[in-house]
Image (cartoon, rainbow, N blue to C red; front, side):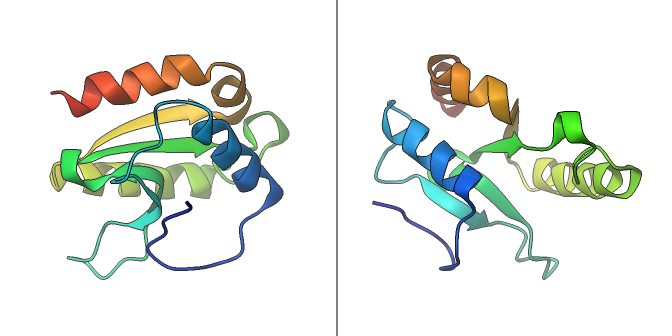
Length: 118
């Protein structure tokens, strides 16, 4: 089941990541896909995967090797603002590079589990 804070079309990469998540113990009833988290400041920031009860999130960064949005100067600065705001609101944000995420799902499932126990 694909739980979302707001329904929208998913990219092929997002679908691939979701399918990979479904094959691990990352999937749980309280996991939210595309979770809108910064409602205090009326931002439209979302986490790729979030476990709101544990204030734990996982961001999958794409385009790292092709000068994508996350590695451009402005995109990088926007990510800093987003992650700092999340931290100030009590969130623990894990980050993954897309290819590593897809190849090492068990590693990220374990990281999420350990982080949610803190």
